[in-house]
Length: 335
Image 1 (cartoon, rainbow, N blue to C red):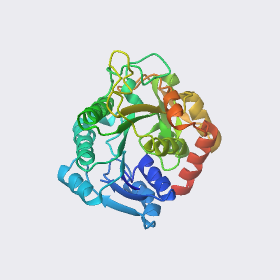
Image 2 (cartoon, rainbow, N blue to C red):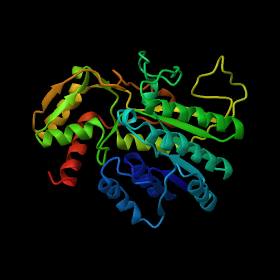
Image 3 (spheres, rainbow, N blue to C red):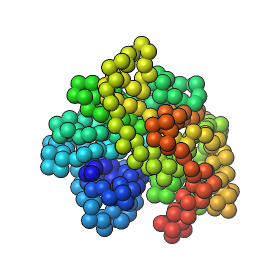
């Protein structure tokens, strides 16, 4: 099949593209390659993909509707994995308009491209951040998610609502994936695992929010990609017996689904830091501080629905995952 992968120079997008190519698919990858973080890192992710004759890369901003629609019309994709977005919770406080452009307008343009070109399945990135003020754990897709604590989270919830409207109006199959704290080699420099690794190696102080009393459902990149690839084959179907009163928010009478994708076993932040310290053989200098705007105390994924649909079970534990991250970081940055 022919896949479109948006955000193909991103942490998850590059790895998803790689796995799709291994399975024999044709992949068109698009990315704006902006300078939100290290452009060289993004280009290093693309480099091995560009050596594959079944991969084509195009530099496109998904917020530019005509460019997106022209791409869809020319390529006639079978499936779309939409991972492009302006990421980051704290940056959404500083630069909210970037999130409106990429996460709202960009998402709408992808929906329009799928609608007008009979794409068989759109899989798109949502986020665990949509759970916001929810305190009940583990987080379940049957829970309501109406109280986001960051604009980033609000845009991701909006993506789910927009997808549902298109599934309902145009019988267009869509699946949203709520990612839980993805980490590993080639990871994002704005996320805690990368920041901690860099600062500890450089002898800098690491900031630890909520005085270390935080829990995250850290999920290794290879496990995430496995789940994405599997769910692409599980195309939602209409269910005319479904009702709002008796159904779950994660499904619909329309061909629409939402799943959690995470490890399903939250790790205390201090234990994760200890794993990095142990792998580096260096004790971090720590600055304990309070909870920061947009932060949540805990993330914890209930992944039973995804397991039932795909057989997806995460395999990589924190010790192995951190070791792989640290090894890559030292090699890539010559540390």
